[in-house]
Image 1 (cartoon, helix red, strand yellow):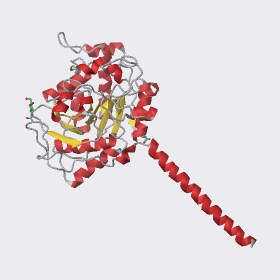
Image 2 (cartoon, helix red, strand yellow; image 1 turned 180 degrees about the vertical axis):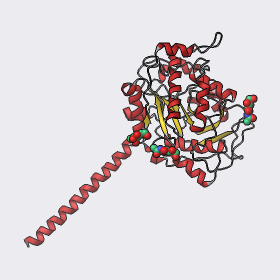
Image 3 (tube, rainbow, N blue to C red; image 1 turned 135 degrees about the horizontal axis):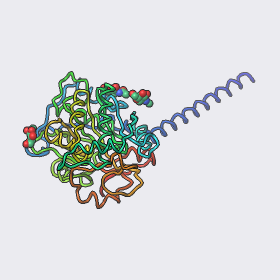
Image 4 (cartoon, rainbow, N blue to C red; image 1 turned 90 degrees about the vertical axis):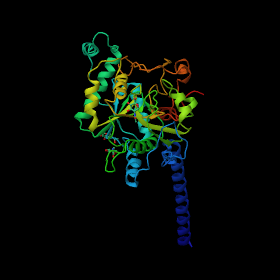
Amino acid sequence: MPCGAGLGRSFIARIALALVLLTVTLCLLWYRDLVSPPSRVLPHAPFNVLQNHDKQPQPGATTSPAAPAAQQQKATWGPRNATLGFDAILALSKGGGQSWRVQGLQAAAALSGLNVTVPPQPTWLPEMVEAFAALSPEGVPKPEPGSAAAWLAHIDLLKYVLQSELNSALIVEDDVDWDIHIKDQMSNIAEAVRQQTHAPHDESNPYSSQWDILWIGHCGDTPMPNETVSLFKDPTVLEHKRYVGFAGTKSYLQAHIPEGQRAVYRSQGAVCSYAYAVHRGGVRKVLDFVSTGLGQAYDTKLFYGCRSGLLKCVAVTPEVMRGEPAERGDNAPGRMASDDGSIGGQEGGGQPDKVAVSEAEKITGTTSNIRQSARCMSLWKKACIGGHK
Ligand SMILES: *[C@@H]1O[C@H](CO)[C@@H](O)[C@H](O)[C@H]1NC(C)=O
Ligand SMILES: *[C@@H]1O[C@H](CO)[C@@H](O)[C@H](O)[C@H]1NC(C)=O
Ligand SMILES: *[C@@H]1O[C@H](CO)[C@@H](O)[C@H](O)[C@H]1NC(C)=O
């Protein structure tokens, strides 16, 4: 029967088409799993502020009680948006969109589902840079021209935050890198910061507003022995023995922080301004403080602000953002140097762990302390685990 045979054929054809579509869909899903950041693997990294019966990080350290559910919810989901729960992520860059720094930054941002804005920077005339450096009177350390220009650029971004009436902003230097699980990490950090600062329940900022600087990208910092430390479990933390950083941070981690955990605490001053957040309630204060110059570099100025208590600073150690990124082509050890010597080439305020400088060339091709570099993943589709073997 031609008619029936026709129906049969079209039925078989439809089944075949359905099978082909199913196969294609499965392949696409599988491919998406391969190329997209696996943040779904860790829908919510196990968050655990240690209770008193757990190992204490150090004598005198205490932990805060768990946050109420609504607050926890806000802290958990706010940081998972394209600006990590801030109103904006602002990158400090002089090179514009063309430099390898910004291209890598935007590639990493795209892979991580982040929206990073690069506000245009004014051109700093040498006279302006010199005038800023000259704010330091005789006997007070002056910034080198590169440091002074970087400092002015940070000031300019803080003004941008103020003028744009942003409620909060994460400020990053343009060669910064992070782990592809940054949203999970920030979600945990937000909750720890809320607990650490005893944030009021009606606080709308996922990170609370009980600080002036939230320092998430530095090159080493440890809490004062008398400070309360909030710890949380984070499977993306590199083994402490592989930590690279300034001034005893590694030995602090090894002695006081259990493996696989990060610490959030009131900071008396980190060094390196790779990534830090400000919010509307504190940005004017930060701006007034850093605009006076007087010091060697922007990050050390912030350090003294935190140390003196003029600024209330909260930091996370190990840090989750880091400069000197994975794809850096030059082999220069130590602190990052800028393409034109003007942005980011700051002097630090501490002494690097001896190993950090001598071994730095060997770690080119990775980003220190970052397990799965977003720059590396976006450019080369591999992890480039950063840190010492
Ligand atoms: C991300 O979350 C913050 C805090 O809730 C909010 O202010 C900001 O507008 C959000 N950004 C985006 C891109 O949704
Ligand atoms: C990123 O944020 C800017 C500023 O808020 C906005 O204009 C732009 O549309 C955003 N881009 C994407 C891809 O969401
Ligand atoms: C810890 O000691 C420092 C320095 O003496 C002091 O500034 C800070 O307020 C103290 N912190 C606490 C929580 O007592």
